[in-house]
Image 1 (cartoon, helix red, strand yellow):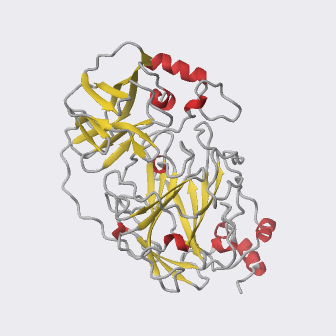
Image 2 (cartoon, rainbow, N blue to C red; image 1 turned 90 degrees about the vertical axis):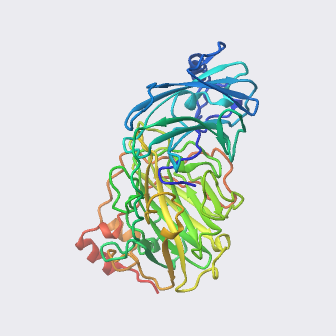
Image 3 (cartoon, rainbow, N blue to C red; image 1 turned 135 degrees about the horizontal axis):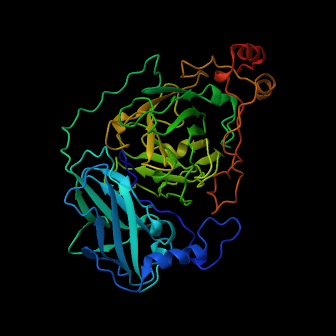
Length: 511
């Protein structure tokens, strides 16, 4: 779904139109009718505007994009410059529930930036609220990234709802797959010469998980509750800290941070994510929404490594999923086969609160179990046997309070698409109960009670763990309800030598 730096389609999921004229109720997440009325007074008018640049593009006979103003109004706008665009819309008919605006920047080669939620209209007065006869001024301000290395910035705009985009009807402008290419900005940048893709990193003692994990079978039943507190998780193969998706170097201040552990048994393939995030964001709650545009975890699974009919699964910090089967690496706005709906079991534990930038969150953990029968395309056999290998990659997306979205991955795709199958890592399935992390403590099973008795409890997180809330929609039939946020006991690898010695004396070794 994503190319490097790509957000693609996104929208803030605001309260449905049925609630527009109702006051905010206890526990509601959308704007109140007073807030909506206030923003309508500022952005909507009965007087037709006179844009500097006229477009007159029709969207399904419901809305017309009359044109836009842009500041600075110069022939060239250099990277690092703040740009303000005023889009002028005319509402010709009731748009209907769920329709949102999107704005994407690309460089004619690949998507770069997503600004769907920038501006007052995008936050509080989306097209689903517009009234027939209104003229709406949709103001957006964003910065062309200082690192932009292409000679142009193309600004694409349109409307989306679920898996569809509103039809664009124009004979005077360019629209591709109902994305209107409204503006092309010259940056004055001379494009760099293409660089050779980086060579795959070889496994080493310093970086044993660069390309390969030996995944062992779970030594006990895994309860999908988001806590990752079973003994089996402690010795599970781990990616280690995810890396910068462009360079493959350790994650820096501009990258997201997290790691993934992997287990398996005869029924499921298990993933356990531990994510560090100081601002938990989610603006949608429906299955197959565009979670990659805010905060989400992602795994790509290709059983035979041929780049055909592989699987994509995302889990947001709210416990919601995007799942798709990709017939081949996607191009443009392809989402793959969204009819692939695995009976995945998912649970999330959050240390913090969703959508509250005023507090200090610390992160979240995700626990996933995927039935083998749902990821069998191309596999030699399911479940796999000892020594079988599959190709996978892991990615993490993070929307900070300010600035562009951050990413991290297991294997850096080397530029371009995250769906670079040739850059996927390898999972080799083993039945022996051993760990793939050479830096880990020798695999022992340590009773939680022993840890609690010997080790000092960890410090409480800055933000209070979020209490479970009522779901906004019916959960998937096999999806477990959100478990309450918890702080897990100390991990053995972080304990003192004396504590480790005592724990080893009490250890329960696998039979």
